[in-house]
Length: 243
Image 1 (tube, rainbow, N blue to C red):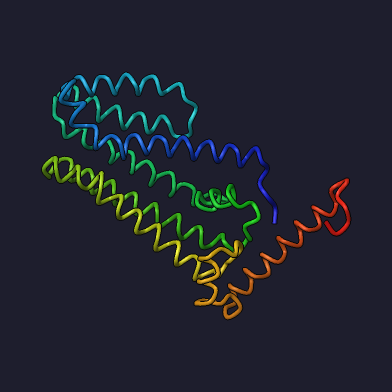
Image 2 (tube, rainbow, N blue to C red):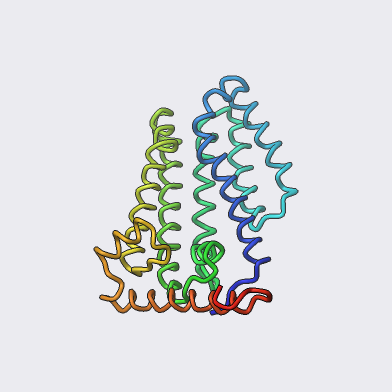
């Protein structure tokens, strides 16, 4: 299995950090801070300030930035002209919609975004994770799209308190639950126990790898990885034999 060059993995990690930072600010901090900031600047003042930040952010070289900027500019301009705070509450919806688009678009690539993330963290991940990663990528794209629709509807049709509770609490509880469920499904599906930690030991007793074809493939992948590491260490100059 070919391993992505370290430069590619570095770019993937930097892109993930950039996306994660943007989501943290716009989807986590924004709903909580919006009332206090809006009380100081007013709806129009906050919209204009965010538009200025948006213009400055255009200097960043990021894929799809024109689409993201255009959508945010429309929402912020509408808030500035109308003084209707509902347009400001719709901003996280555009963020989640953008995430849905990124995940869905990656399904056209050789490696969907979940697989790229997995290989950036575990370069030795076996090739048979590909189909599973495609399914999980599609699942998250659907989740983010549904979140965007729900936030947009709540922004315009519900009380501000309901919108804030959903965007700052309920949605994150749902994301945490989905992440936890996917983790247990993945461990049970692949029965891939490379670390030998407490969880791997417990789960391998409940779901032994040798009882399924995927589990046996996982065992072979782990054995192959350790064999490759042993050969690489043995080939290092100056390393004593048998060290």
